[in-house]
Amino acid sequence: MSTYYDALVVMGFGGPTSMDEVEPFLKHITGGRITPERMATVREHYAHFGGVSPLNGQNQKLADDLATRLRARGLDVPVRLTHAHVVPFPEQTLAQLAAGGHERVLVLVPAAYSSYVGCRFYREALAAATPVDDDGRPRLEVAKINPFYDMPGFVDAQVGLLEPVVRAHPDATLLFTTHSLPTGLSESSGVGGDGYLGQHRRVIDRILAGLAGQGLRPDWQLCYTSQGGAPGDSWLTPDVNDVIDELATQDVKDVIVVSIGFLSDHMEVIWDLDNEAAQTARGHGMGFHRVPTVANEPVFLDGLAELVARGLAGEDHRGDDDCGGADCCPNPGGAVPAVRGVTP
Image 1 (spheres, rainbow, N blue to C red):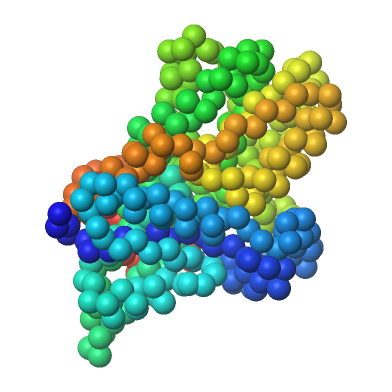
Image 2: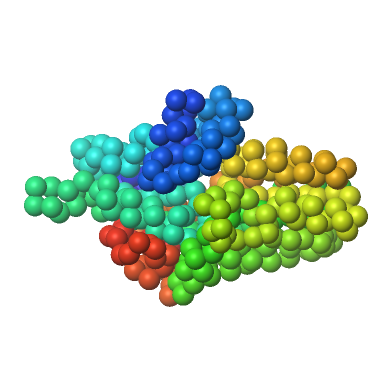
């Protein structure tokens, strides 16, 4: 079956594969602007796992799962994995595709929500990485799929994972967690601002509606993990550990924690939730029940493959409120060229 785009690239964040790679990785993420204290803290996290991030392997599995599902639909396009912060970098991957005769490349970033760091940053990186000919003209047409928080399979997978846990612990408080952002990036996210928070709240509303349809109505809160930056910087709060501390004063006996901000159980999920948040809960004698992320759920993968298939066919239903144009998730440092975003 023919497609408009003749290759798919899954572009992940990337992660180190040894302790020797941790410091260069962190410097690449921050452009070298990382305090010695923050460097030491994050190095310690990675040291518990031998310096190996599970994220690269998880994104390779995602690429393989999508390739299998696309072939089942008769779409036999090459699927490549690239990373923003470790090899292979997008300039390497795109150059190889251009050298192989490909002309149009569709890119999927495993990030469901709008923000500069989860959306426009990747569009800018792809624009900078696109190979050009001797006249400076791009040798590839490159487009990125827009954030897909409203994809039905994403919410359906969350509901399916949560239902048995909520049913087993009906008095538990449900904690939806996601990556904290500097408040300025959150306020400027999406089209018109506050897209990051608004999209999370819509996902939560749909998950709660799905649970209510099964007779489950847990108490809940939205909270955050992975806060970085310098002391005194303003980030989204409350932190998940602070929420657990507060719930302990209210005699809550159990918490159910679900990471709706991340698709797979990578380092931040494993460390921030399975280690730090779990220890906080157990320090209060509280039960801690962490729900798996959606990456391995067939309903999620099927939905994502359907989205990608529409994108490969050239479908673009981007509306006024969708990311992908010049007016979403602005770069705080000023305008930078970016590939276009599409909403299949």
